Image 1 (tube, one colour):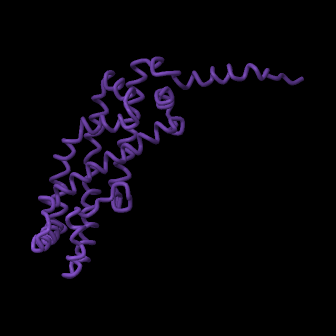
Image 2 (cartoon, rainbow, N blue to C red):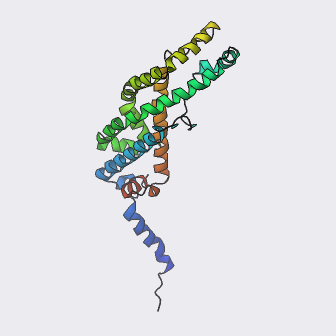
Length: 228
């Protein structure tokens, strides 16, 4: 003889199952769970972002973070193409993106240090913040340090590839036509865009965790972000 569960009891059963995986609201989360969940999210998002960008063509093939030519160079492209510099501009853009991908892996230790520094107060602020509050935390804790750390490596790459010379030559041509000045140096420009690209990708990872916490396969992420 089969046993049937009355349909009117199903919602209660489902709620009981759900409550074992999720906190019903932020107020139901313990400080320990909130902090643990955020640490997992921070580490997962930062490692994934570095992994996607710090590979060959990680920037170049990603329209969200691809580093374009400085606006002053792009505006001057017709003039530079008239002087036979069109291919030089294309090469310059490719080289800048390769310089950024070379620098990004250096971010991982700094980002993981930021994860370890997370406090209960930080966790509460992040959880009550907007959809990129995890990324904002990283930006506040690591942004300036990343720029300082990236710059020497970017400069070494740009010097080795003669990128600086190409950049300066292109800017020099622009100045002959009286066009507005571009960035002070290619390494400053690439460093700024590389750091910003990293935060863009961390934000993408954060949004995905928030959108589908169950899909992460992590119980603590499901519990913490399921309560939002």
